[in-house]
Image 1 (tube, rainbow, N blue to C red):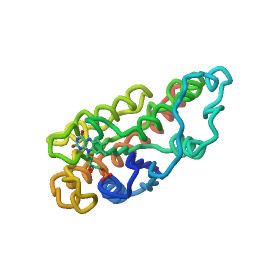
Image 2: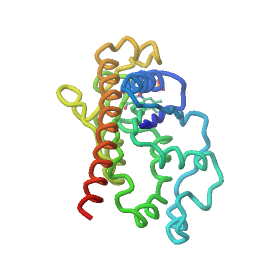
Image 3: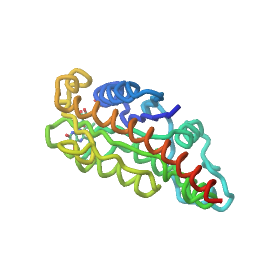
Length: 216
Ligand SMILES: Cc1cc2nc3c(=O)[nH]c(=O)nc-3n(C[C@H](O)[C@H](O)[C@H](O)COP(=O)(O)O)c2cc1C
């Protein structure tokens, strides 16, 4: 099975959660795909303080904070693909999502052990703004930056969906997002594309492995 992890960076159960769940539903239409949904809403996640103790101690999770992040490392490490969705806050991702991303500093340890750890994992992005052109594309770039820095393959939506799906909620929570028909169509497209790409990459990794074994 291929596992797609969806993370909502909204503090509320509203437009972003609605959009992300649409994407995950579309992802599950791809045979062999399962999904997991995580909301950062209500979670207590402290800032990374750049002490680098995780790196010094060779840990793959934070060694100083005991907070809700402790349970969020493993789902991230185990997934084959990701869909991160954020409300647009000041033309960028929310503080919640930025803090979650920053807390993956210990990934450095993982990549030191295996530089290709994330090279066969894929990711897509969703941004939900209150205004039509409120910074959704800047927000998508924040999410894609996280993929690039970790060596995760960023999945483009292709023609018209470019670097991810943009939704206009009109500041009316899930109802507003639902009414953005094009936005939700693109959200579902990116969900399906992430799932299909994750399946293809996983099959490709196995093919490469067997070719390598055959070559001796
Ligand atoms: C602090 C804050 C900053 C915001 N900044 C923007 C913005 O720059 N552009 C925009 O289009 N909407 C902005 N919004 C509106 C939200 O992006 C919008 O309501 C979105 O649907 C919220 O997602 P949610 O419904 O999942 O909580 C902002 C909202 C808040 C609370």
